[in-house]
Amino acid sequence: MSFSKNIGYMYAYNNGIRNRNVGFVKAEVRNDMLKININMKEAYFDGGNCFDVHVFFRRNGKICGIYLGSMNISEGCGEFRYVGLAEDIQNSGISSDKLSGVFLSRNKSIVKIFGAEWDDMVIDTDMIRFGDEWQDDKEDLVVYEIAEAVESQENTAVTVEQDLWEELYSNKEKVLL
Image (tube, rainbow, N blue to C red; front, side, top):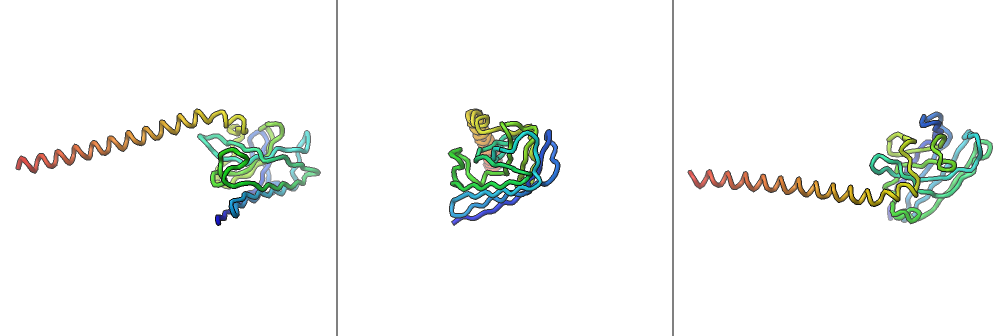
């Protein structure tokens, strides 16, 4: 049985600038189920009250959102509850241990959002990618990961080769003596 809990304060972001605290989010994994609770107060927003809720993870400097559902904020207050599998959130292939936070947006706009993070890294709204955007990058990610693996193996091979030469050279001196 696995258990983990993350709690973060929800902030209003306007044009990428974090403004004020408007609530909190709690994400909990218990018995392979992910539960997310969002509570917001004094979360006022011009232009409508329905928001898309996304959990996010970070990849190559990008904030990659996974859509969970929608949340209504009425008179500055709102609540959202989600329960799903922790190992494959919304069939994205991403597990809960990769998550860094939550953000709420309207119509995929990043001008005004609400967001919370629990990895102690800032939410750079310019780096937000929605599910259909970051999933298109999967091929690029595979190429990047393969290149990293090859580079790691090459570095290991060079180290082994250097060690062998040093060993042979030291043995050659012993034989000559």
